[in-house]
Length: 147
Length: 64
Image (cartoon, rainbow over all chains, first blue to last red; front, side, top):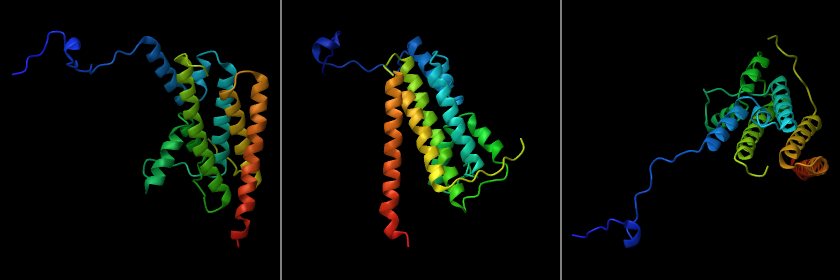
């Protein structure tokens, strides 16, 4: 039977990888800021005193959501019929709390029989993806990466 | 909340709204100095419009 050394590093026997990674406080803070930025557009930047970026993200996402919902774009729900509906739902959820705002604005339901409604659907999805990008940016900035 | 009146935009207005908002957001997220931001926003907006209108014209022969 093969014997293993007490010091695996010197005998070429690899030590088992650690199953638990310890997350530093800075990393946890970065994750929290990213989630905050997702939940309320611009909050992740505002908490880092990046006021200009926070304001622009808030207004950009808000304007796109307001325009998309006002144009009777499709605000997707969990009950999607196919994969595209699910993707649309994920994109719409990217707006965080503004998803509820879109639902509140669009009380009359979607109307994608006209080009305007179709554009509205795209604007809503764009708002979600833009907010996810901004949240990722806030996360990276909190980690100290140049942003 | 009371129902908002339906917003009706032309194709170009909707396209321009999209391009302008995204350009401004990208400019602020991607650049730090105000001068760089303005340059980026204008260049990005120009490219959005150029590509959008270009693709529109490229599809024109197949539209009827």
